[in-house]
Image 1 (spheres, rainbow, N blue to C red):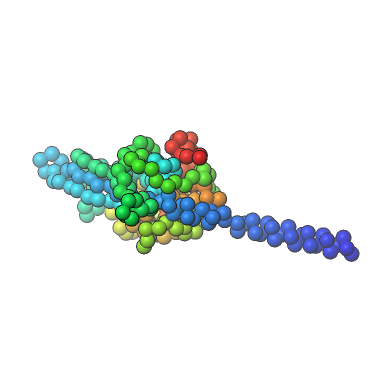
Image 2: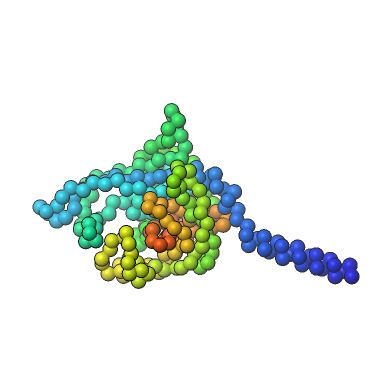
Length: 259
């Protein structure tokens, strides 16, 4: 009888450990560190749109986010830091030539006088096929790095957002799809005015997350439950669409800090 009781108690304890392990999310322990490493990125650019003598001046300031993976390097989305080569007034693609562009980063730490620091930045790497980039800062900032991991369908993930505040925080969700095609996913794509063939914008590796993404969150990082980087937010659709980073593990690790 004593043996049976011990066996049952051990079985219950084992089930408890397994169940608890499934819900163990150490990423929450790093929330403050993640918040301090998240930065706002502003791209100011000017140029001319149209062809030859019919071209007209264009200027704009766009906004996104990124995360510092070392004191001087920030991982973000490529379209957050690189001016577009086309604009889409009324959904019609018009070629654009950029004549001047500047990248400014707003850190989450206050500098002298109690103000947040504006830091100039330059692009040091961009993925040719995916919406990923790394920028170099003129001044150091707080950083966060726990490595890179792959992700599978239905895995739980955490999006770093700062919507409504200057402090980054985590929003949990799930990978609900792998591969994305704008018009095939939704014939009425809303605020993303593209009238070209959707095949140009299709990708077999983009991750679809059951997380709402707001304007200005492009470039935000997506982490797994261990706090490892799995993707970077690229599109705002009905759900968040992000680029997985495991493919670029070696490149990103060259800029990351292991201190």
